[in-house]
Image (cartoon, rainbow, N blue to C red):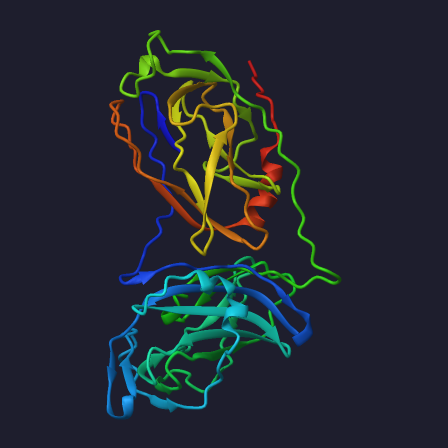
Length: 395
């Protein structure tokens, strides 16, 4: 979606997804329960990192040196053998079966759990060789921070003991080793934590939504279909009765009666999940009596495994056309987009608006927007912000 202001351009800002060189981010962030083992799973994720060069020596033994992790001033070093091996990695991460079979990338996956009254961060590493040198896991920077309360859960220890050390790790090439980091147990009220201090797993402030275990069976609940007020067409064309031409604003449709809401932060979102579709509302401040907008067919949602959920419609509004919306300066309006349904095991999404085709209108900005790591839990809590609120005019 692009929003441009008639007469004056409003610069919209979003969070840009930054990709590290030679790193393909395919983080997943969802939860499950494993009651039979006494292990409670809070969240898990994954990214693909370029593999180091592998050398073959005597007896076909393979070795590799890990990428620099910007901890060169720390000189402590150790060697690790007999590390725990995760033999059921495909049960923990079934989505790995869909990853491209490309030996140039290594899945760096992690899993946050509660075990024996401690919070445990499992950092999984598939061995690209029988011996990997210059590995790095954690230091005093490693912690979990409750995003709501600010409580810091500092690292207690690691298993094996590699705390604040570079290390050489030995295991069979292709094995997935399980490097564990231990913290105090999270408070039961914890909703989102940020994970710091594990650069090789891409966690340097990564937000993670916590799913607590519920008593009884875990049932996923859907929302009812939201009923936002749908805009209506005021005029088929602004002023010229000609076929639509994006370069001629006189041919654009003029809409009115957008869904009105109470004032909120520009760009606030809310989400409703149903088995048939995903409904995403976005609220905006109307700065001018007449503004122009566009929603394109290539707007999409991404889950953290990279799956796409395409837009189907924008309720009451044209798709792939610039149009005008008339209202009052000072209105707060909401538009409802409808996407493909999200699976129940998706807990965060990325909202993507690709760059649009340029057009001639008051220096319009047609650049895209990417907003990553949006908590679905928070979006569902925002539903209450989108109740219809009639315009109140005091004279």
